[in-house]
Structures are given as structure tokens and as C-alpha cells.
Length: 116
Image 1: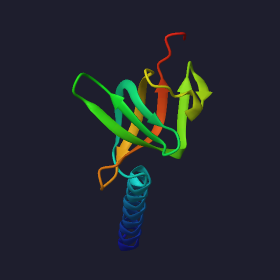
Image 2: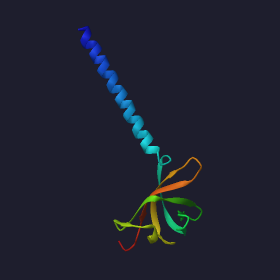
Image 3: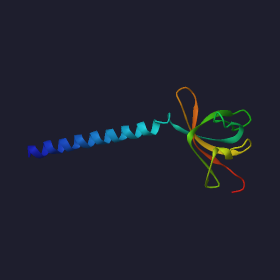
Image 4: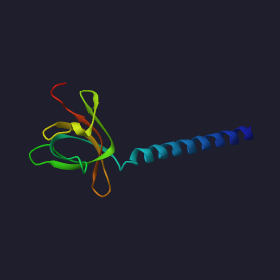
């Protein structure tokens, strides 16, 4: 009877370790791009393809500068697009994360094309 108790405690301990390790691994993977992901919607008011910088305005007084990485996913009308498709005046929805230095890194952009 005592042997079963020790075995059950050992199994419970191992399951706890695996659970904690799994949660930790997911947390590290989730934040490896800089932190919590956010969504921002607005109109492109500035775009510099050489520096991969995008300025988006949400309202009359709210505009933000974003950095596009080489891995940014861009979609228009449910089809893949490229950074060459981005133009001043386009309505966009984008996902980004805040770096510790305040830089906003874009992971995806959805061009809200009126032709769709």
C-alpha cells in the first residue's frame, strides 16, 4: 500500500513538472517577438519602404510609427500581398508588439481594400 502512495506522488510530481515546463515554454514563445500583441486600425499617412517604417493614423490626434520586419505577413482581399502594395491613404488593420525600447514591431497587416 505504501508503494502505491509513493508511486502516485512521483507521478503527480512529474506531471506538475511537465505542466509548469509547458506553460513556461509557451510563455517564452509567446513573448519572444517582444511582448504582448496588440491590434491597431487606421489609415496609412506615411510609408518609407527603404527603412520599413509605417505611420498610421487612427483618428484626428492619434498616429503611431511602426517598424516592418522581413517576416511581416501582408494580406489584401484574403490573398497574400507584399510591402510594395502598401500606399499612403490605405486603410489597414495590423498586429504589433511593443519592444521594451518603445518600438512597435508589426507582425501582420490586413489591407482593408474597398474592392474586396
